[in-house]
Amino acid sequence: MHDRHSSQQAGVPYTGGGQLMPLSTIDRSQVDPVIRRLNALRTLSTEARTSLEYAMLEGIQRAGAGEDLISEGDPVDSIRLVLSGWLCRYKTLEDGRRQIVNFLFPGESCDAHAFLLPVMDHSIAAMTPVVYTEIKRARFESLVATDRSLAEAFLCETLVNSAIQREWAINLGRRVAFERVAHLFCEIIERLRPVGMVEGNSCVMPVTQMDLADATGLSVVHLNRTVQELRASGLIVLRDRTLTITDLDALKDAALFSPSYLQLYRRG
Amino acid sequence: MHDRHSSQQAGVPYTGGGQLMPLSTIDRSQVDPVIRRLNALRTLSTEARTSLEYAMLEGIQRAGAGEDLISEGDPVDSIRLVLSGWLCRYKTLEDGRRQIVNFLFPGESCDAHAFLLPVMDHSIAAMTPVVYTEIKRARFESLVATDRSLAEAFLCETLVNSAIQREWAINLGRRVAFERVAHLFCEIIERLRPVGMVEGNSCVMPVTQMDLADATGLSVVHLNRTVQELRASGLIVLRDRTLTITDLDALKDAALFSPSYLQLYRRG
DNA sequence: AAACTGCCTTTACGTAAGTTACGTCAATTA
DNA sequence: TAATTGACGTAACTTACGTAAAGGCAGTTT
Image (cartoon, rainbow over the protein chains, first blue to last red):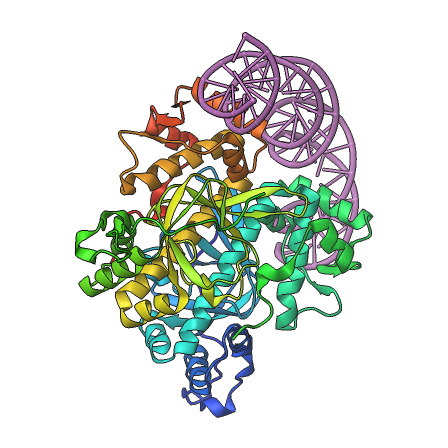
């Protein structure tokens, strides 16, 4: 279904003579979402920020839509951090049924700490063209070993991810289709907002209805029906790959959405 | 729905004069499931085992069936480790719909590391009478700070828990009722086996069908129908609170069950 | 311009699962 | 012995959701 790892070095511009430019003069803003997110979860020391920025800028890669970054069964020998684009974690059954178990947005981590387990229990795919950075296992281990705030930030990242997955479980198990899709849209908007990808209550919706169906545990047809219902109810506008939530409070009510599980407000 | 914390000191026998017996003479076996599990996830140093044993034996508590150990919104100021009994993590919607997002068995940890987040995003309830041990935040932090193997074991515990939740997501989203219940039974047997709670392919099934329904995202009625189907198919016998899987391979096939996500085989 | 492709949309129909309402039975309690 | 309770079991009915098949439409490719 998905092809693998045709990623290439990207993002760190060459001076022309084959040498990397010094860090001060190249574009550091592309790794900013990661720094911002980690720093919101756990205040980072200045040294931690700098050393992490260095490590990130050296491993920048790209992936095309549909490409697997890592697949179930693969050993985890590096960690990947999302710089731009939409990704998903998913699992499949032998007969092809697929369930997306989480989305991954800029600033988030694909597999921080997962490398304590022998192999991946799930796959991660790019749903759009994606820019990410890859830090090798040893490098990452020495980064977190030398700075406690960094280690804790990555741990928080893992824990928030876990909390989101629990919310998805109740979404799949106990909400009806209408609530389920409404909930997903609420979550997407609220997760994209801190990354600056929301204007008003609008964001791009670059994924297919098939993907949305796999995320909500519905068939494509029923997902489409449900999107029509949401449109008809006047809660959302979805066209030209843009989602606009016209009445966010009403949508949250309909979805039984309460955002605390996202841990959007910092603690330490 | 559940009442709170009527737990009392238990498990550490008094000499009669109000003093604790020395550790060497009291029953250490009750904390054994935790040591065994953590050690299987990550080989523990002897010192780590001893200091953890001490900490555990001092905080032993009991809870009755139906009682919440901790509820959504509570701050996390200690960690709890299960010594005996069945517990569950669950979330509820405002209108009372409940989804169990995971079971907790002896040896497992309720909230290791969760205390990096401000408050619980879900609740934990005893489904049977339960014995557990509670280690205060500061004590736990100093334990893991002084021993790397212990810190890594608890992190692994968190990661395995996360992997199980992903499998539950695909169970809820993509398996039909028959497969779903079959999968849950497979998982229960395989998680209880390393704790010595399985004989042949039989174990106690101390929870109500309501609980099983909340774990599989079904109504009680439909769960019951599905259990009847499983019985009729000859795959299981379930009576007198005892589950016997008569053909485990066939049940695993029917459930599309593959146990790798449970990480039953050690790595480090 | 024709053909093709990917994605969205719609219809018609069947089935799996929810709901409501009563059963039974065994274990308490009076 | 009767009444009470909690869990399991069953039936009749309703509904939400899945499946199959086909049409629309914009963006490519030739």
